[in-house]
Structure formats: C-alpha cells, structure tokens
Image 1: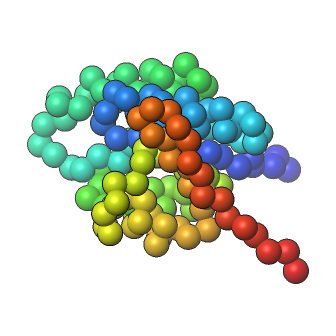
Image 2: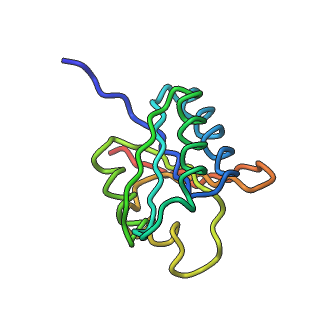
Length: 137
C-alpha cells in the first residue's frame, strides 16, 4: 500500500508577486519532505481576462518548482481552502501576510482549519510561521 505524503500548500491570489509564496513553500516542502501544492481561490466573475495572465504566470512558476496548481471559484476563499486542506493531507499553508482584519482570509481559515500550521511571507520575503504544538499522550 502506497503511503500518501503530507503536503505544503501555497495559497496565492491573482497577484504576480505571489511567486514569492510559491518559492518559499517549495523550500519548506523540501525541508520537511512534503509534496508541494498550489491553490488559488478566485471569486466568481464575469470576465476572467483581468486575471488570466497572472494566473498563467503563477501556474508556470508552480510547474518550474514541480508543483501542481489548482484554481477554485468561490465567494468564500477561506472555507474552500480549508476543504482543500482536509481533502489533500495538507499539514501547512503558506500565504501572504495577514491584513489585520477580523474577517481576513487567515482569520477565517484558522476558524475553519485550526489544526493547520500557517506560514506567512511578507513582500520583503521575511517569513513568519505559526506552528501547531501537538501533545502526545
């Protein structure tokens, strides 16, 4: 029986500078012997031409580091990401920085998936991690 490896999930938006998130997630995945996955949750819209070039660029960056990229369409990015985490054996997500809002992606994600470790990558590439402390009885 083949053992399924844990994954690190890079959560990206429709911004070119999210490539830093993918590259940081790749490093974390390599260091922890995990697979790398990339996820972008886009709000449903009438015209995707405004984001297609960016998503294609991030897809190319994902391929260059050996990761698949999934694009989902939802009005609730945090809930969709949490469902993806549960369905794909993800141990850690890597995102941009928390915007400070009470209803931000990271606050909502943490409510939906409190047992998932989170790493944030600032625009200056500084990395901040919130790791779970697991108790073993």
